Image (cartoon, rainbow, N blue to C red; front, top):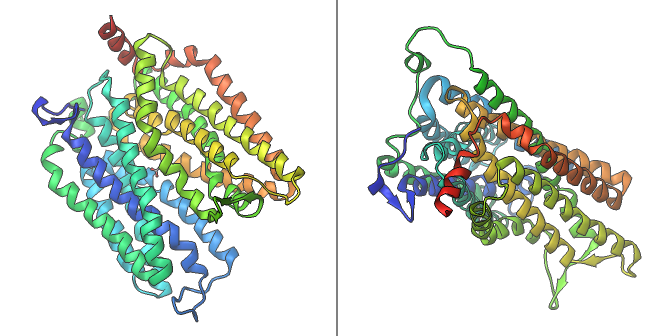
Length: 453
Ligand code: GLN
């Protein structure tokens, strides 16, 4: 993990960060663009002018669930590929090519082309996503206070792609032609790969293959040290937070989407807001509040206050939980109002709290992994993180299904109580858990405090 030479910085960060920023922005444009029209394409009738594959809703939802889970599960072999064989930098290239090829298969309106395309995208995202995230961490030396901010900047790039793609690809796919929409999504990744190849000069020092043999100077592989083992334990524990968080947050696409459609008064200033519009709110809020939240933590830390990654994640879980309190109020209003509908402002407020929680967890977790994972497992651990976030997605689906019988109020209250209790528990044990990091996380804090004096 080497730092870039000083002259290669822009606005205080290595130029390589911006190369990774734009590559990932376009990759996410492809991913979220394709995702926005996928289920619509599968369920559109074959006889329609803009013909789809004519599947029934249940089969389409099922394949959609597996697809969104596998995309993240494949991050584990994607991480292994980098750690064991080719390094992160090449794995990102391989991933980019698979993603482009996958999208261009989707341009053909045939079932076989759909399967080949989807499989290729799954492999591609698995190779690209964990490795590009690890490369961001590789730009910073241990203890560099800019690392967390860098991940926030990177995360904003992700969300620029996530925000614009459903609007642009969604329009082209839905209004003009599905297959053209997929092609357009593929153009996104093509642009991303061009940026990445062009930017190689800023990425020379990072993401290269580190053979285990050279690392230890012998042909045997050495076991992890006690410190490395402790760090792995705390990383695995932090994955529990990741499942809880994404399990709560990802209800946005399912339960909360349906709730907005059926039980929220979506008329604002005389105009009815489509329920799907609310789906881009998260990304919009991340773009808007990413920098203020990062700035808040820098200030907070400079005053010497508790600001470890685990503390932020605990607080983030509580804040996300509080978003469900607003949704519970919405459910009460739905039950008592004459038209059976609640104000849309509850949703605006809930999504706002969810994003503040997200900004305290998701980029923080990415940064945390790059600080704690032993070098030989760096990409694998990042892959494992995405895999558990995929499991969180699946959990969200299960919770959404449970709401069909239990009712929304019960489910919203349940998620609130669980998230707040879990977050509080984490904060109570934060000091103990921090010990297991053996300073990998709070070196940065000391540096800031020295600077502040
Ligand atoms: N929204 C983020 C992204 O698309 C987080 C993904 C995840 O961790 N599941 O990169």
